[in-house]
Length: 281
Figure 1: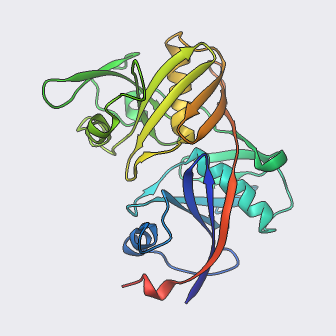
Figure 2: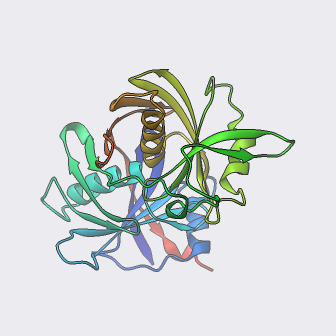
């Protein structure tokens, strides 16, 4: 069985995007893991699937699977690529669409040159909304790591869970060592995306993200939103900021009590057609 797909990326956060409206396929966990392999498969951080919506007045259903095959609630870079994909595949003529995700409805709008602006919805901060195990809600939390180390984190749910810590320098931060510990920490029962942010000034911050089920990626859209909000809540960033990741920059806007807006680029890498039976058990 052959499956058509598009390889895309948002600031280097790369995706295999599949239209399951005009074609049919069943992709189980093992198949996704094999497709994600960068030596023997397509290679990607996440698989993005376009499906018909289950809800009224919504244009599409958007499903996201990490490279390890686990399904997640939201992906900010992915929803931008998704928006460009459905338009260029002529699945819609709209430039502004409503998309159903596991985390709720998002409303992206396709602009010029592949840039997309997305209403990412309202952030959540309460421990049970992350989810995060804590005796009571606080602005910041101390998280114990190995070797008697601890870090100070903020927790934010942007449709998926994030833990944000501020570091003096993202280039020298021990993301490879601390990232897996935070991701799988016992206080995060559904694991978490770990963000490491360096504040440059009130309009600019640098960020690295260790994503659950993936590892460190070149960019993370929801991670950029969570980091920006964390910096704003701490009084370190203004209401409109530029978050600089290894793969490029995102514009994030937020005011207390309002939705979060994310704006950034997308890119097509190539179109492909693959014999799916080779990857299925």
